[in-house]
Length: 74
Image 1 (cartoon, rainbow, N blue to C red):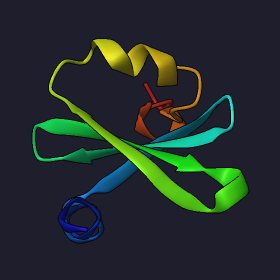
Image 2: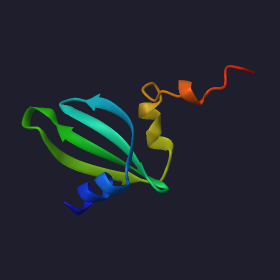
Image 3: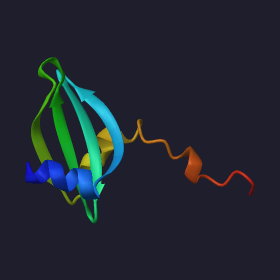
Image 4: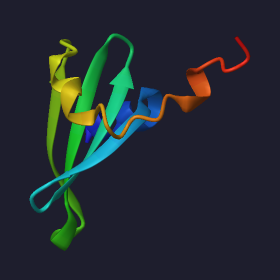
């Protein structure tokens, strides 16, 4: 419950993906990342995974929209 509260209070949602029967949402809190594995058929969060490395972000590269960050006027 403390992890869920920390995500609500301080987390920024970055991306979503699916993995089998889970909807996985990626959040950033300060200098680390948190994945929430949501079991869709039971509508409940089953697992939290936190990490500092950017390597696991590869799974999200196709789903992160950076178009608003690109300056097309140059």
